[in-house]
Each structure stands twice: as structure tokens, then as C-alpha cells.
Length: 341
Image 1 (tube, helix red, strand yellow):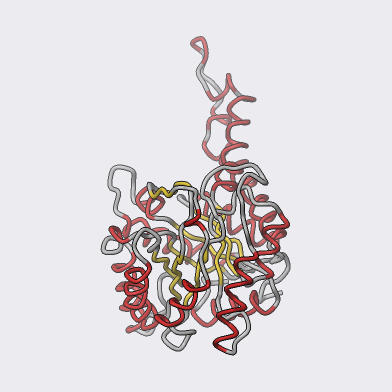
Image 2 (cartoon, one colour):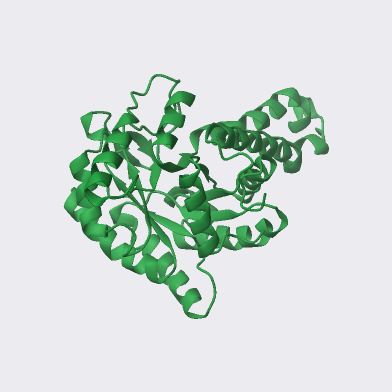
């Protein structure tokens, strides 16, 4: 299928919320990891979201170039071509973008999509994230309001973060403390500033102890009941059940019980990065160890071209990551839910 249109993306999100499942949102940084992610979704019979961070976009442009917009556009162009060959819908998203990178990442990408829509085409990306967790909530929502208007005009969904995710990702680091828990008051302020969809659709990453990075199950003190509390209390004031379309950040190390509880409380998108990075690299490492004298020219020998051909270990890496994407689909209950099923 082609990359999801704005209408198909909206249908994807609506179906997830109505049927209490979530889409894995897989971070990629190369054509290989993108192929692995789409393969995983296709084998699971799940539509899905593929996303690129500011660091990933820099890398995609060439490690010596470091142009976030160029890398993101190149990834999107590649994705639009290869996704046609798969039977599931794929949406493209840009991940965490802090204030100091908005002018070099999200705003130019919004302009590109606005120009495409003006020509009668679909936007390049289906959603973008503004990460205002490092600034005061008032400023966070002021910027979100400005970006939401531009996103809506370009038929794009905006993702925001209300609260703080602990740990570190792409150079953005936060302490692990009480600030990791969003409050009902934060939720009410969000609705007051952005509305409930009439000003444009947005996804909200409410934080409930989320932490980026590598943690064993149980090491992170998640409180998914906070999501239910905010949904219930804000919903009661609005007369609307589960008013927020929620995103789960920092999911590595979460137990299946915690993941499912978050989904039951309105999470329809869960970011997956650390686990899929490992799933991609582990088979490649195994190939190197098992074919040591083939990938290296040891003791004056010539090695084995079939062993050091990047396609040899690349296929294994993509298969490993694809399986982990399928596991994420199963955990989030999106297996077999494709709109094309």
C-alpha cells in the first residue's frame, strides 16, 4: 500500500482507540531499519508508524553533512516508494524535536508538506512531534498552538508532550524524579489551549514515569493509572470519554501488564527504539563472531567475500528487527488489525 493518506491515518488512529490497541512507532535511521520495520508490520498484519528523530535524520543525510531536513526528506521519499510493495498502511512521523531544533527540523518540514498540499498532493509526513518538555507548560502550549495551526493546514497530526520523560535520547536528558508524572491540571491546560480536535488533531504524550534508555522490566516505576485519572477527570468536564489520544514514550523495560494498562487508558501509539536497535544489531554481531575468519583477513588470508558482504549480515539484522516489531504488535494488540485485513 502507499504511505497512509491523512484520511487513512485518521482512520488508523480512530480504529486503535475504539478497539483498545496501539500502534508501535518504530524509530529508524537507515533504509535497512526502515525495511525491517515495514517487514515486521506486514508479517504481523498490522498497520504501523515509522518515525525518525532529529539525530536519526542527521545521520540519514550523511554523517558528515548532518542536515536534518535533508535526511528526513530522503527517508520519506524512500519510504513512499518501498511501502507500495507491502499490504499494510504505514504512517511517517518525526520524533522528539526540542525548541532549539524547531527551525531546523519541524517548521521546514511543515512548509514542505504545506506546499505539497497546495499542489493537491498529500503531506510528506503524516505527523510531527513538538517536544516542549524542557520549557514551562505555558510556553510549551503556546508553541504547540502555533504548530497545530500549521499542521492542520497541511493535513498533518501534531504530537505534543505534556510532562517530562526521564533518561536521555538524542542529547535531551532529564532527571528521574516527580516531574515524570503529568497532572490533571496539566491535562486541563492542554485542552484549554489546543481544544479537542476542532483546531486540528493532536496526539498527547502524558508522562506516567516514562524513561528513555535501557532498563530491565520492573526497574522503571510506571503508574499507568495516572492516564486513567487524567482521561476521566478531563473527560468529565468535557462530557467526552477518554478525550486524549495518548502516546507512550520511554517504553523499554516496561512489563506487558504496564503496557496493556496504558493501552486500556487510551494509548494508541507507543514509541519503540532501544529494543529494536538491539534486535537489529544482535544478529549482525552473531554473524561477525561466527564468521570471524571470513569477515576479517586473518593471518594474510583473503577472507570470505560472501561473509563480509553487507547483505549477508544485513539480512539477518533486518530479520531480527522485524521479529521484534512483530512482538511489539502482539504486546500492543495491533496484530491482525490492518485496515486492509
